[in-house]
Length: 269
Image: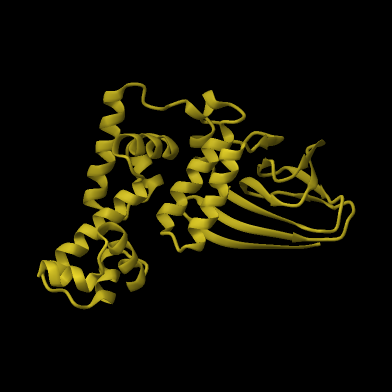
């Protein structure tokens, strides 16, 4: 069996990986998961996973979780291989996602059409060159939605109960980002004493856009201010303001304003 994993994003306690398994049909060997909590979405193929004596058939209609120290075995009914997307979490993020519990649930999790589409939209965003903050926020939201298929009350625990509390939370996040735009979603959540997925949902409900989008808008506003002042070095501008590169700056400004940086400079200067 040949197993390969390509890390798409790895930051802020979460890693998103594209996992490909190529194998002949047959029974696998017993292995042990060490030090890693994961939520794995099957994109293609089918296989059997046995963990701590419990067997589950896995295909593109389900996801499954792993926890550190589990003994597991993968058996393959056919030889066509399989492809998965794995979300790996640190312990603190697991607890925030799963109502304070230190381990993710066992067994297969159903992935309804909406969850599966959200999973594939995450990968599409990566292929389009999405900002890493956006990928992390999408991945956390996807994990919370998938886990809610098992126990929605556990996932919802700790969410601010009143409209006033939710507005205060969104305003707190806006204030923190205005001061330091590069603060990640998990960092903001820790500072505001709430789970990342609750913060993301509450912020979106209050503002109509994601935290990642709000961060990008703050960057674009800063870029407009610099362009109005006559800034001509777009590579320096992109580096100063936290864009991936000059082309990323241009894409964001076109998305936000419908104009190129040169057109904006001409209009504003």
